[in-house]
Length: 225
Image (cartoon, rainbow, N blue to C red):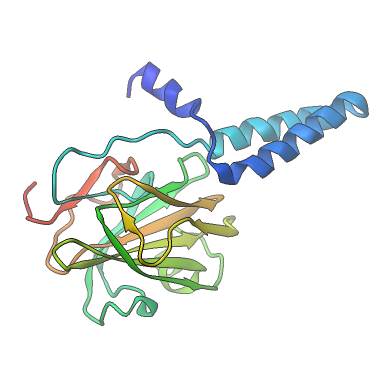
């Protein structure tokens, strides 16, 4: 990534979910200027952190039909067969799952992996284990979405809370038509996003790879590299 591109990402406008936190930090900063310098330092530092954490850069999906892109920034921590969350009613057959771990340094805006229609959204309360653990898929608090593609196949995208994440936000509703790379939510602060591919579709990524949400190709519907 070039220096200009890196600066554009860091300095991109914050996601609306960050505005209350930024406003709170700014209020603490201003109060500190009047009453206590140490509070101004804390408030200013918190504002800078929130501006960085909630940054929401523009992304350009691949100009290529039939590709599934990463639903989040971060590092791939798992690639393997798994059954989609039962609450989505996608059946008991295992399919390929790609799990992406988001550290507090990653962009946390979630993006749609492909064009389609949201057929089901199911929120499940749970624990707040380290999101990089495999059992986080089952035990942690999560928000699961089922998406029907134009050819009738279905995928699942799951927002999973992490060790310090305490709030999952989802901005789409059942029945919404969505586009590849479109924003659909955010998780605060540190989390994981799982993508369950259509049955028979193989992933093109491996554990340890870094994903760019809305841009990195995870799989293709026709199996082409």
